[in-house]
Image 1 (cartoon, protein in one colour):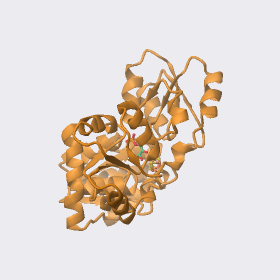
Image 2: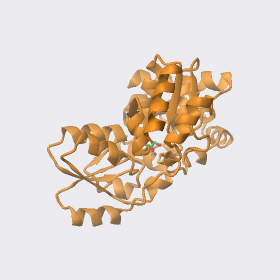
Image 3: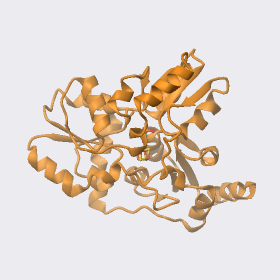
Image 4: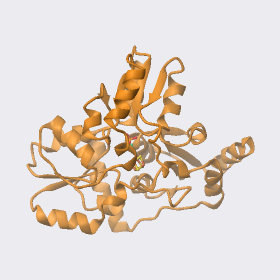
Length: 302
Ligand code: 13P
Ligand code: SF4
């Protein structure tokens, strides 16, 4: 293992590469990464990096977003099959048909969508800024289509007090977490604060002390005087939370909240990716340019 780590380090310098990893990555991937963060943080990092090669340890739509923001760089996804089931729940044809049914509506897409879907949207958002984005555009647009996550859409819609035209997409990992899971953990750890992701079901967000993106969770916990937390999101984040807060205790809301796609990236695949400069993300120029508009509007607001 140490051999793999030192080979990765060596190749990183040789190829002027940076390793970006999402908070749900395996612990060993988080530990070798140059930057670990949420979808928003990773997008910002991808847009600012001086490296020539970005090895993206996450899922396909995240690597595409990095490519859109850094089109002149080589963006690599160590496992080409690392996708996002929620992003796959909507395709360009379905979105076009929804837009035809609602003429005059603007479209906001969750970053968990393909580059092609983004290219059809006016605004992009992540879980960290979805509410802020919605509050910014609501005064100018009565009709807003929000795709693909129906649970994030409902959470933002409730907070912003504005109706959205939604899509039936959802994250199968977060949808697995039930209010019963939260209640059970709460009965075992009554003093623990409950923190959940807005991709969770409304019945779950309703029983949380805080609803936040993965980065929002990290920031809140670092600054919190509380010592114990029930975490309602993918289990990978607990590695980062524990590293940042060695004196605090974390209880997963559900042991079943594992994103198998995120876990497809291994140290061996990262090494292979750097050795072979694969799998390289490429996008048609028109998709790249159109998708960038919606992401740029998001980054300007953040
Ligand atoms: P964030 O880390 O941006 O909160 O997103 C969670 C997620 O599901 C990414 O796929
Ligand atoms: Fe997609 Fe859910 Fe996995 Fe995130 S956790 S990548 S939304 S399936």
